[in-house]
Image (cartoon, rainbow, N blue to C red):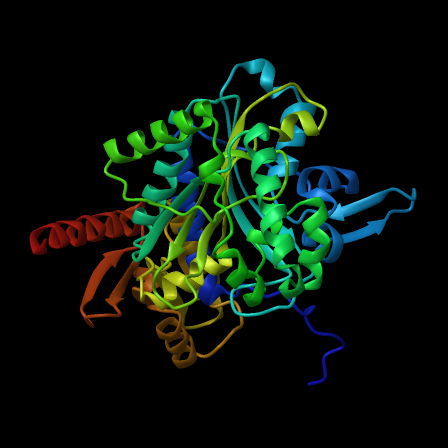
Length: 435
């Protein structure tokens, strides 16, 4: 078989054998968001390019190297969204959600697009779960966001995560810090990578966040932002730590967590996996961005949030051998012995589905042996054969595919549905007794 084309590099097809895992994770995430009072928002997959130029930053790798940008037929520059925060902020402002009172709590599960080298857990099309809270400046809001992320990982059964926090202060704190960084890195500029040499004059905080091993080594002895915090920012950070301690949330202060863009302020945090030497970041980009709304043309409004990549999260869960709830399989497969019985099987399946049972019948006209083999292949819990005798007598035998037990049932009224309801209750009672 010669295909005319294949999937685009850096994308993946989520097949039925894996899609139930995605559904489980997304359900847990959206349910947890609801518990914390967050409401779902859906934004378009593409936006005007200037939104990301301003929100993500013109001098970032995302904007300069990784965005999928194109001109539409009206010669407008559009970009497939590389992250979820900027579109959520844009929608919040444009639709006037801030008029409904604060805090504004939004959540989303959205596809994102970045042109980067595909590797394990990283794709050019990926999916992001995000939480955004607008209008709350209190460290209690920061603590609530971190509590939610902590609970979320617990509900998913993920272990071996460390919470690392830092404060990057207000604009005044960062100005003093930037000056100290420039002085430090200037002394070591011959060892910096080309990109960081360019950052040295414009935004030295981004050097601290560089992934180049040489730059990381130099950054180890660089000044720490936490030593340049003003009294108000220090108080904000200390209060956050008090909230986390009161909630019995273990954390570590990591002064090397920074955000290079100007609108990021105060709290920044990450959840890091301790399962490997690379210490993979599971929840990156968490923290305050109190200057973003003004940057987008809105009023002065504090904001905080976090994002989690679903692909990398699933990879971590699988590496920890976390069991996903199995997808519900077929409740009953109705096999047909002859042409006339196809109509009866069709109507029995329809009745069962209307009662919310998963019912299947043969639609490809296989022989009876092949039908029952298919029922076993799809994991049907029960099977039954409908033929002329069963139709005339309004009776049938239903077989438990796990135990081999058989039960006689009538095919009139709601007896078939009633049988499944009784069986489900018996199974529930059995599980409770075993527990």
